Image 1 (cartoon, rainbow, N blue to C red):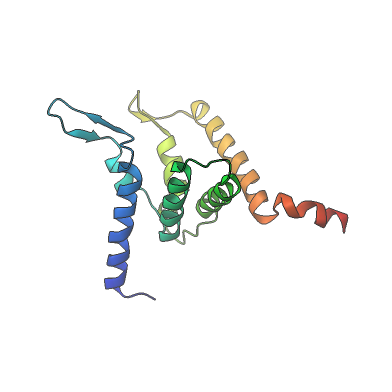
Image 2 (cartoon, rainbow, N blue to C red):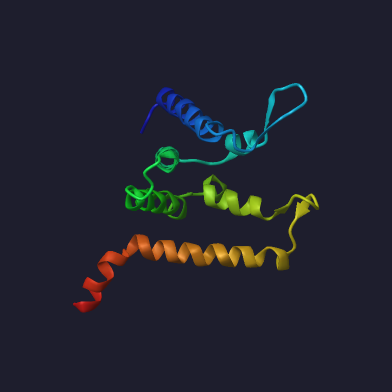
Length: 155
């Protein structure tokens, strides 16, 4: 177990990494009339539930995608992407399901911004079905990688 001082240090470094991810390319920001940029993603970055490992993987993936030699690093990028996505899928939540970034994302997906209310089932269930399908595919790839499938079926 970590003491509270080291947890605070970790959360501060996690916040700075998160800010670096969101602010490095000014995504989600627009300039307002006073010349200051309005950060549309500020609340999302503040409220989103990251584990320390997920933050590190996000930074690594972001930096890998920013490099110019995409073709040379394609396999490494796919591995980091799979690691990051499965870290959300297999995250342990204990008694607090909303401590999961995936559950948080799915809850936010259920909000209809135009109508300023929750989506009705027929406008939300197809989204959940798509996410469930993707989770199944990613889980299968994590638990039984494609490279090993031929060996296991041949035995």
